[in-house]
Length: 317
Image 1: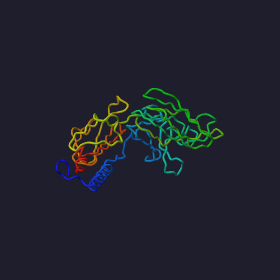
Image 2 (image 1 turned 90 degrees about the vertical axis):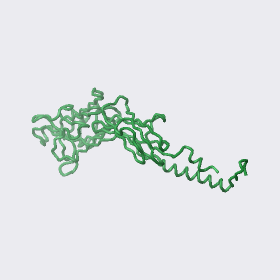
Image 3 (image 1 turned 60 degrees about the vertical axis):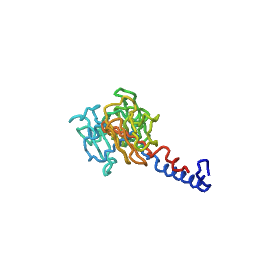
Image 4 (image 1 turned 120 degrees about the vertical axis):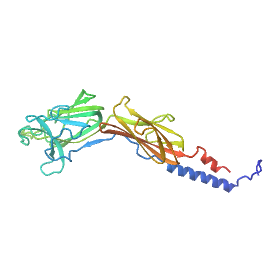
């Protein structure tokens, strides 16, 4: 008996209570595992395979990027200029499509600068991690296969020189070391047989992602919450804020989605949102920022408890 006249818990009761606490903590840890979907800027991949051979390529991939053989945002080169086309590569029976820059007069004639025109990509939003392949490379007498002018935030940044070895075929081009690219110009292309006959160059497998990213923050927790697990009480308001990087990014839209029992206070289509957990368990909050069809996303897991002390209360004698 203790001083209050109640019976002290036996050793077995204490051990059982301890096991119960351990079991509840284990269950809670399972219920509160992160969702695994941390989010990041979405990668765009362009392979041209959905286009029929001979399709003029200009605006199929807008609003993300515009293609041209004439200039940035310049469209078609007209009846006596160059244009970009989806073409079969390797010819003639492959189902793969690649990009080729051809003169509109005498298209397909190997002696009419077939595959030797310029290529311009004009991005509506600055991009990072830009990569693509130059195809069908044979020989360029020690010169680069092309000159590639790179523009960052609409200003000339630098020129990249892709070199290949004899009969290499594919030259991978990675511009991932340069951030916020808004355009590239591919020109002065060189590809020949050892005898000097011109050989067409093709381009394919363009991949890139937007320069922006979205992070989730909350006034009650320091730092970014993407990919983390946070605790909240049932019935308590949870304020979440979408923060864009780099700061100053404007012009896009937000969208919040949630899993698990909850109610939303305010609009799910704004940078900030408040939710109220309505039951114990796990909630996943996802936010997506979109601009010109580019997207970046982030998520946080919220573990809901009935009371901060509920494990302690049910384990007391």
